[in-house]
Length: 89
Picture 1 (tube, rainbow, N blue to C red):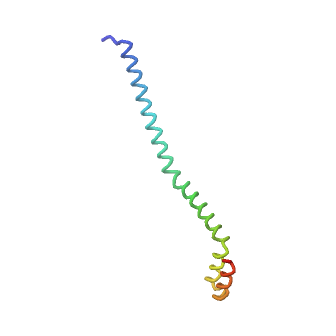
Picture 2 (cartoon, rainbow, N blue to C red):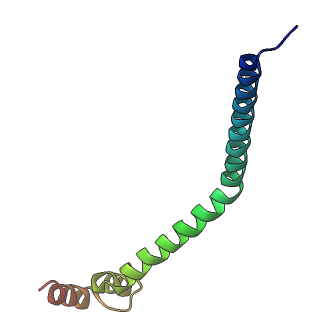
């Protein structure tokens, strides 16, 4: 059987397409593996940082500090209400 230039070009294009598809599949599989392994660690770090930031914001809020002091018994209800009213002015 005699192969023409057209057949050889077609075969080359098909081969290139096949390697491209296989390469894309390998890349996707690698990325999925990386995300499954590293993803939870990265999300944990990000959530931990956000939680820390939220706690810092809560700690700086005078009303929350006052509520904590009242809840722990450090100040009386009268003191809590008076201080809260002053802070809300």
